Image (cartoon, rainbow, N blue to C red; front, side, top):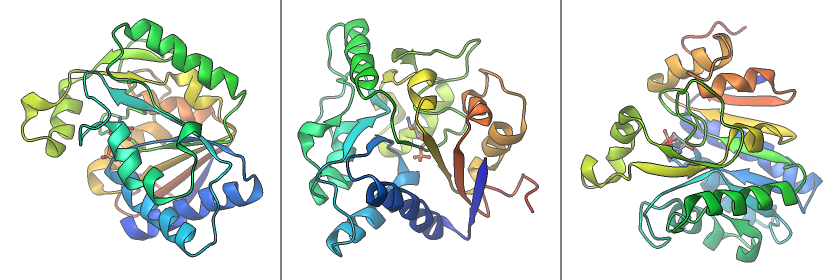
Amino acid sequence: MRIIKAKDYDDMSRKAAAVISSQVTLKPDSVLGLATGSTVEGLYKELVKLFNQGTLDFSQVRSVNLDEYVGLPPDHDQSYNYFMKTNLFSKINIDEANTNLPNGLARDSDLECKRYDKIIDGFGQMDLQLLGLGNNGHIGFNEPSDTFMTNTHCVELTDETIESNARFFSDKSQVPKKALTMGIKGITQAKIVLLCVSGTHKAEALKNVLAGPVTPQIQGSILQMHPNLVVVADKDALSKLQTS
Ligand code: GLP
């Protein structure tokens, strides 16, 4: 595991963008696992900047997103489809036909999860999986549980997650109760896992993920077993960990 220390959110965003930028430069047809959330907004802005400067070319990149809310249409401003379009896809030269997200409107979520796993399996191995971290240590929407779910699945969101994501909706009752999420196998099969964390409110979760026991109650703790985990975290997020 490598921990790259950042001064603050902006520094984390620049450093994480540099990791993705190197990946795409070294392998222009990289398969990127992408994430949503406020943590990665700044990093996507940095990637857009690099694209506009002519430094990065996404024309051959393929992408697979982690998750999507059940019940939100792709044009809903809180859907993860919408997030990806507005924060990244519409601002770079990625071919949208090469981007993938779960369909939150699928009538049969089991079938949709199978369809999604086929896409993931079809890529063989992702080159890099980008992750944010939930306040309860979740990755994607893999919520605390008695087991690690390997495949893409439909998950009931915990009250804690609903509460913490309510800030993006007009009120808590508008937050979907379910989501489709890539499972732990899909996430951890990537050659590189890039975990980005910012802020004191994530410090406890990050400590549990990196230095606590590996347990499905803290789903991100499985990342300790990954051979190539890169953590880019700011000072505040690292404040409960002893790092040299
Ligand atoms: C959501 C997403 C996660 C994300 C997490 C943290 O629940 N499913 O993929 O990492 O929240 O979000 P934020 O970056 O907004 O704190």
